[in-house]
Image 1: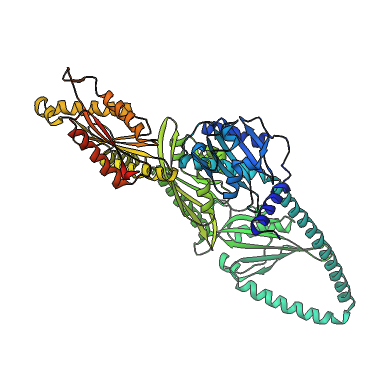
Image 2: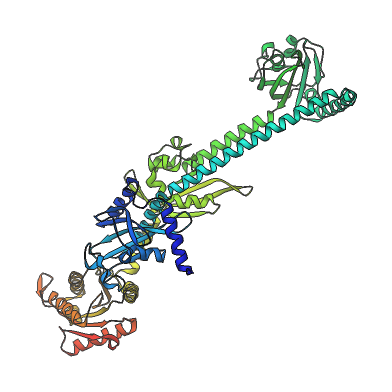
Length: 635
């Protein structure tokens, strides 16, 4: 009987083979992502790797000749088993991979990063990975970029499955339509049969007539109660219906008048309210001639001076044999509606003026990701006219580069959740930090669109950066200050523990600095400290941290230092850096330093600091201008 793990692996391999991708030729739709990954991360090798039962096979590859390798030496198999991003900064330092043939031999892998790609049902099928022959660090931004690219590869990988599912759904829909059509046909036959039966039941005609009379009475009652004016005439033009709303609208009852007299008698005018309607333009006369009238506008002036703006719709009335029976029109008083539309237009104009002049981007996006509103600030900031944006999707209007970092926030908003983000944009020669808020437009529990408000946060963020720099930098030397040093030391210790690497901490004092200040003055002392800091920074790696704690006290955090003997070589380099004369007020002057170094294979903050301090004072007791190296914690 298979274990749960073996069963899960069978399911995973089955899902992979179901895609029908294994052993197919390379395709540009996958190659473009490996090319992008190689270029984006500066990696010589990028792969779309699919992990089969006994091998890993490369659907796409950049910088690697072979198309597959045994699964036993596959890095990607580890990432699939982990089902999460796998990063190996240095394979020589990772016991899982140090002896791997792909590390000890070609292609000599020293760095690996792989993000799993999944089937539509969530099975990890393989990875999008990058490989380097040099060890390297892999930050959060790079991880996020690799995950994004892997998601695109995953979408491409599953495209066939999704298309097949869509085709199956369409086939099922067509079958359902056929069934519905059959049911409609059956129902139609049943109705015809019933109608035939009713026609044969002549004895029920009297009852039907009674029902019709009752309905007519109901219709008359309805016509008298509704607020829509209804007017009808016979085939000869004589008015036969003039309901209560029509009487209220005209301020009179119906009179026996010919159509040519209607306009003058009932005070009917064109939309301007001044020109009397000609007979050919009167809606009821048009309907009597057989025209289908829809929302014809006219003005009715009440005898008491009220002016009504009316929309009239009507049609001709015909008998069972097609004979002309007359015509009917319904008239809706839209006076208040028209006034409301004018007010709405005025309000819209005011809101548009406000929106166009506030120092922010304001937009409305519908559920299809299309712009329905955008203020003029888009043209000022991005050079895109708001009129050209309407009806276009966000990527169509603003470009894919604008849309991509905002896509997740927009989709989250369409799910009913407000979201916010900050993005740095450079358009039209100016760099801005845009702080954007997305608010869902929710009505009756449904999301109908997205309100967008973006403000320019550039000045605020620059001020924050300046405050951060002031809080974390030494004003004299530009080096990290004590606060920044404490943070970086804690981070370095955490990295050392995760990677099982040793590290060292260096304390340095400028020898006889008080004498320099007392004899040459503080300005000269400051010049010495700046030169001292400059030489320290030039003597260590860029990844090491050089900081000034206070006065003439300096510290260096050294990561990945293999031994205490290596610390001795570093100390010699630092002492050598100080041997050249310092130029103080145009005069050469000898400046030396006392150095204390604490090295530890298992670093701990307190032990490192205490040991480095002890080593520094040991150097001072030895006569200064020397360095001492001690092992922290006795390891």
